Image (cartoon, rainbow over all chains, first blue to last red; front, side):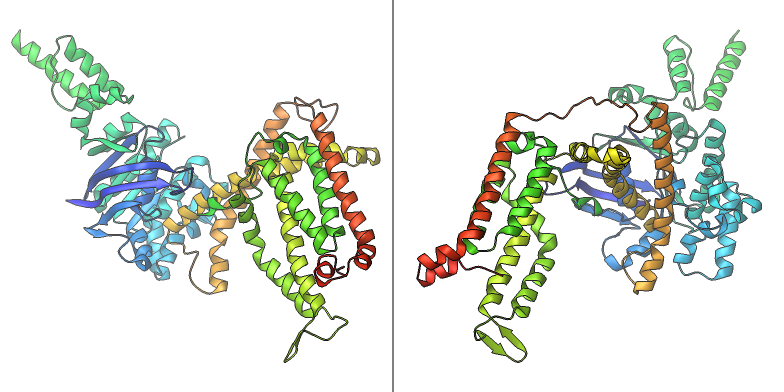
Length: 288
Length: 289
């Protein structure tokens, strides 16, 4: 079932001025409940606009955004409730930190929800645990943290609101491989444990293959393809048509298949390809 | 959206006004303002209005854009006119006398002419300066005009550089404000409802990150400039040197004639009035004090 859905949505910037620009052109796409859906596409393909539509920061020029089947702009006064349900973490979210301590900053969202002090404290602790923020960090100023820690604190600030849908716009941009793994791994664990719906915007095909269930490919203000990770990455041809790449390991697997080594299984993660090669070698041995 | 705000917007173009040297334009704007303040009779204002229309036509900036410049000051405009209308005490009997309101003929003259004066000032300075001069050219012009102050050890170049950097970063800061606002809205911040105190408090999550990032940006910019060996105006040469052309001198002559015409009108208004009897001429050459 689709948790959140866009129905024939178009979006234009600066409508009615000479600077008018179409960012989304009549797109319809759904994001499955409890799954991790990746959103990929080139810069300027409309990813970030789509993300801003999901929690009502932007209002579609045409079409509707449906959360649990209801139009989020149905009642403009309730938009705050929508934003509590759809947590959005923007690109480079560390600039949003402002409070005296990390604890208070993570608690900003829950405070806006009007929760009790104990409830806020509990949620802050939970969010900090998932993002790997220690007790000591919680008491320090957010401006004393390192870049990666700031990023995690900012993500924790949204997790603490316990959203039903979490939207992350390039959460790992500009981090080293270890920082990427920590953040994305922590989030995946959180999603699996709580069963929320996650939408992950990324440039990295490797991250998509590793962490996502489904993938939505955007191109030129339209949805180009949707499908499971396996479906999307087995169709390398059409991805390369719009200038996107498949994960490197999937390329190796494809090349092996082309050279007469039949592989089967999840041919887009390192583990999957390794298992496929292993089983191929075992079959070959058995034949001999 | 915030980004729809136009602050001293520059409209690139290729008109004779656009091509003028920025120094010329600054001096012309000053001359124009002097002329507007020297004018003191309906005939002088009529003359100035005609002159301004010609300047606008030459600049090829659409009238709609010009009128948009007046909109933000509409309140001040009405306020000034009203004050003049109600506060002027004339020599003759009041035209209207109602409750504590006394309106004299002089008051009407002053209110109308005050309004026209403010509108002319806005149109003149925006057409001659902001609409047709890029911020960079404008600061270059100011720097060049103020350069005699260097004799008194005033760091003119540094002021000009500070000004152009400030102008350059206005759009960046607006964009950044919008970005942070959206991020905090996503965390449930509410900037639009509640009491004034509540709204002022709601600005903290916006202002703290904004100030911090502005400082960071300033620091990075300073480092980047130093990396390219910027050190103030120590023997700094310019890529594009300002140069006056025949066009500039032509405009100087026209504006000098404008001031001369306004001054002559001012001097000879009483004499003309004596020679031209009749109500019509009385109004046209009425001297407003």
